[in-house]
Length: 113
Image (cartoon, rainbow, N blue to C red):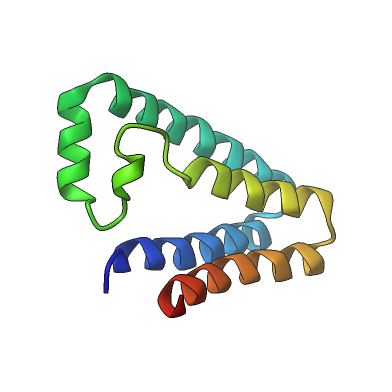
């Protein structure tokens, strides 16, 4: 199955981010999401600016990165921001349902479709 690692990353990422929210609490979790976005953004910029680093990461994480993402930012940052904004803007029940639909629905859609 192509991109199995990516599908598991989406599933575990959504559930993991949601778990952090309930374990750490709203304010800490939202702060952690912000720090995580900054760290990933810096790694992504370095990946795009340093060809050897990009090749190294693509070799090791080829099951996670699509070909059209090799020379641009991946969807990880919007994914985390989407989860964080959902948990910020809506009640925990509504946001949790949305995140679960994202995590499970994305995997189901790419598996079936």
